[in-house]
Length: 128
View (cartoon, rainbow, N blue to C red):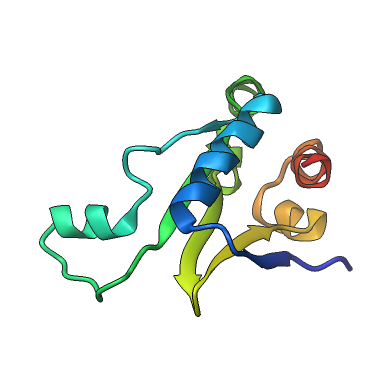
């Protein structure tokens, strides 16, 4: 059984520069950053009166491929629970940390009773 995978890496780029560069890369593959105005969690939390630690720079970046998502969700809206793809970035020890969780076909199948969806979603993870 293939397991879910936590992708973890780091870069010497600033968090801001990494996010800017990521936007250019995802665009080349037909993706968009869906939540550009809301991905900086310090700002989002602050708008709701929540305080964060100094230097807190977590970004929750929602990546979407509108054409594929529209087709997939039109075929079965139950797929929506696994569709948002979030890339998390934050600064730790002077470097930008990057995290992404991808799900195995077995676990996708366990959540959604949909014969085509596990292979389709797993294919997205492999391509990029």
